[in-house]
Amino acid sequence: MEFDQQALVKEITFRTSRSAGAGGQNVNKVETRVEVMLSIPESKVLSDYQKARIYSRLKNRINSEGILTVSCSETRSQLRNRQIASGRLLELLRLALEKKKIRKKTGIPTAVKRKRLDNKKKQSEKKSRRKFDSD
Image (cartoon, rainbow, N blue to C red):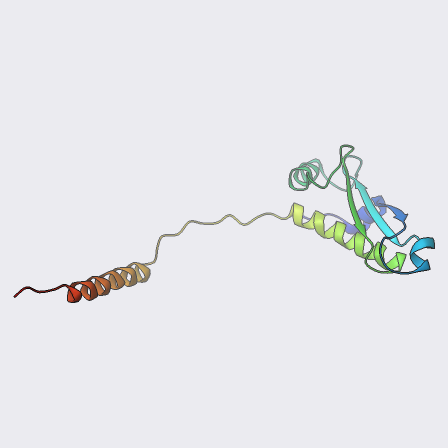
């Protein structure tokens, strides 16, 4: 299940703010923290099925207005933080739309059963050798 990344990037909105933490004067005057937001209900790139799947998989990350938000303040460069946050958002969407492989139940292999029974037999013989013989 894929989507057009180039078209989706055009629907993304950005918001910047000042980062927290070390950085001296740079932190106090430069807005390097970037929030990337995508409005799921207003998206024209995603189908209704994809939107429903995203809502079910990412419900903890989507706010009440249906906006998925990812933020980044790792670097001192606003441009680099913007790229990182956009990449994370696209990766989140890709993982949410990925189909999970159905696990096929299999039986216990014969060799494993045989090994378990052999171990039980050895343990039994060991215990029986320890028993006191009154003869």
